[in-house]
Length: 305
Image 1 (cartoon, one colour):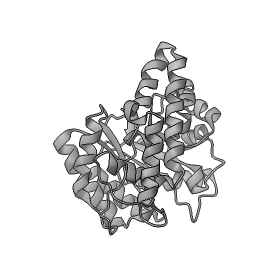
Image 2 (spheres, one colour):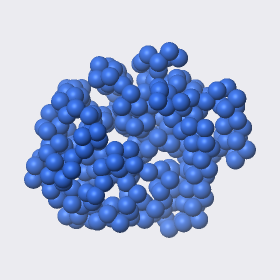
Image 3 (cartoon, one colour):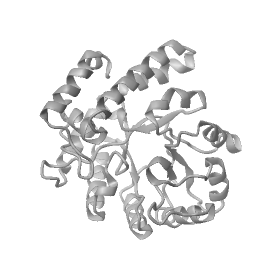
Image 4 (cartoon, one colour):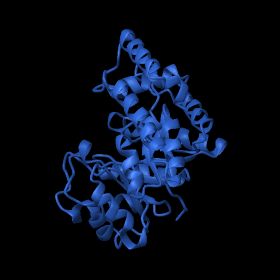
């Protein structure tokens, strides 16, 4: 199994579309260049931010192939989200990720027919992880989106370890910080638990987080990077200032619909990822201008990087 950890920032990247909604994979190179210029060397593709639930399997395979080509050319590390309602689709995506020499795979569990027991959840993950046995596997815990709750991360790790040889950890987008701490400390800190709720990034650092996966990392990495530098020095004032800045950006972007506005902001920053797909909406021109004016008013353009 390849060695990989989520230390540092790993942006959850947008899937780029043309204005008519077709994939626009030529933009992937621009996405990678934008992040590498900001000292970010890894990406998490095809997840929530990547609108994976609105992509066909064929589109997700094409997206994986393009990122793999960019990775070979640039050295950027690619983690592929492979979760799907159909476990066979998820396994197909995982197998492709291994062929493409991705750094790791991650999956949400099916959420229409939900796993009702911890055993069913582990069995679902094991089926998909077995399709990419040479890659680190991360369960993606995001109860706000999947409705799958009641399985504390430390319980999951104990149950999954004997059945998933390539288990590396959990991509943790769950607000239960207490359970997060238990998972981080389990078996002497054996498992990698990248944090996934940007609004609580500072709180996660106090619980031992060493990195994360987030959508804001695409367009406001500076505060997160400065928090990660200041926290080990005990500089809480700087950490609080930077978390405050991040929160203001999130609120402004979310005010008119987070997905569409985040993609519009990326386009403004020179990375034309296009619109969001329905059922996510998109701001009109006046909405984009209002968002940019609000961001300018809080000084965003001077400290975003």
